[in-house]
Image (cartoon, rainbow, N blue to C red):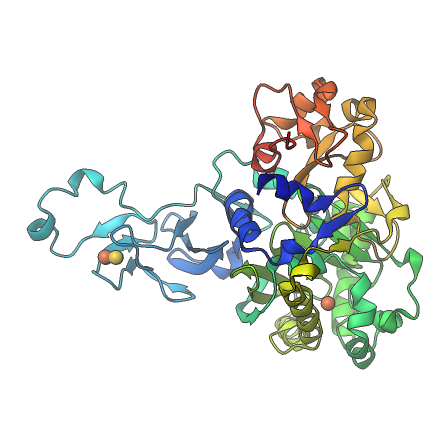
Length: 502
Ligand code: FES
Ligand SMILES: [Fe+2]
């Protein structure tokens, strides 16, 4: 399998084997290497505002509970009893003082501690006395927040959430930093028969919007209807960004209100734009007024402007559970929040116009690979490649066209740079997981064309790379680089790059 892993991605030609959407073995590796090591969206603080509140979710296929304990601290645990493993919480969310296991009645506090064991003295004697700490619900070791969004990570050694979000955090500031946001729940949940990566990739795929959603765009009207059918694809109408660690951002300028009907949302944005400009500057104010589609690797996506927040829960290689919230700015009037919630469900709920369009494609992209010959064929990711570059204002790898697959092909960019080792040594580098989730790749990243060391992950990666560029080698017979000569292997490298097959 190890050799096959590396043959899944053709860095030179920007191709990917279709197996990545089908094979059980790849899916199992993803659970081990991605979902147990990346930062995963768990909840938003607005969903658990008070001590005693909880929200149940998944990290990969691991069931998890997110709580706000009596000290107002946000925690997360594996939702499985430490006695014989039953799920301790079956509710989706709520408020409680304790979780009582339905199997034998062990009771756990909102902080995960083991509070009581039925008939403890008579059935256990003193056996559990010294073990109570170990018998608490298994905690998620890293829980951090950005703009109220709560993420968890099973890997003790992962970089901080802020480092992991990288450039995506810069873009998210535009709509989170002024007044804050909240998710309007409960989320709508549905199952789609497709691989989870198809969703994640789709939310930075602007190419499909005009074509797949042509009827919906025509019905809704407004500025976005101009791209219906891709009859007119304004080249200067937006940019697409590969934003490090596998994240991607697609911006359509001045189109934040594109999928909302009526003037109220436009009026709200217009009234707040000067505040954003004063607080964050014109580039982010412009983003605030623009439509932004983003995927936070691996499985969380949002649409600023359309006000959608989604998480794609893997349920096997050919099944994904989709959760959809409406996202609103905290100081929006209640009636506007309600309108936004209705608009989101109309477009992106289970039977939403856009959701239904997308689901057909997602299913098709997955199920066609049941054919042996088909799944050994390739997919192409060359869209917009001649526009890839950097921008003085907007961070990340920027493709200056309204549609691009730049997020899928960071590997190509890095491959080009490896040929010029001086550049690798001179630039700030970045670790980026290929959007398909299989291989971490190194890539250089410049912001305004200069080396910005503050952007480096603190712990391990950059010093090694910038000090010893010559240790980054690329075997001529292999598309995956080998990192050699470092004393320790950084977190992200350790996760995916294990060297070339010999
Ligand atoms: S499995 Fe939970 S109390 Fe036994
Ligand atoms: Fe879509």
